Image (cartoon, rainbow, N blue to C red; front, side, top):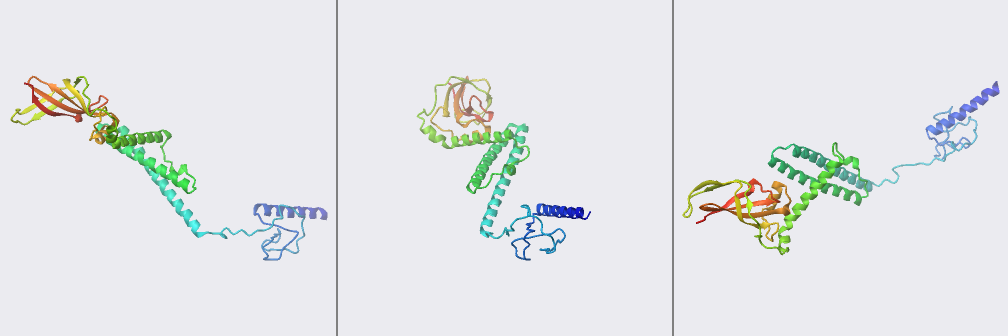
Length: 310
């Protein structure tokens, strides 16, 4: 019975050593107990917690899980304050860029909903212009963020620049709108140079007669040559002597091209300024208008002059 009890105690001691060294990761050397405070080796006996050494404890067999050389690891031993400050500043700049991108995406989502729900064409066009401008800004912010991360060897954190309801479709649409907007603005900026180098005629006169798409009001004060007039040139009247004064197909740039593009969202390169004449029984009416691929906004047609046909 005494032998059995002694074997049981030895098993408990072995189990206690194994548990302590595995869970608390304490470096043990029961075969070589150190002098207290030496710092090179550590030993703990299950019946003597709080004591560095227990001389009365029996020596246990060597086990590799108990036998570890204690190494003092101070995480601040090689602390570099300047390097730490630099890393902190870079992380703060990265966080600021991420916040700016998230804010821009949220703004674009709201603008897209406003554009889609707008009923008035003028309001819709204004919102679309604002959307395109903000989409261009988002592209710039994304490019700046990518360059910053690459230049400073930082990881690009996609989860920190994501916002709710900003899907791939939304991102692709914003990117395409930004490209179209930038492309048209670049064309407007360089229009005069491109036309000067095009070798096209200053105006095109080889055009057939056209039909007036909108009614034109006539309101003239009396002059020495013409009486006072309050009348209209009705829609559907035939326009003769039609020619292109400026724009597409000529070497003459349209001075109002940017306003036309931002007002109607039609391709800048396709705008033309045209002129035509309506012949009446007693008077002729010269009409000017802006046209883009056959579309003539009603606000962009006006009476330019009146003359007698006799």
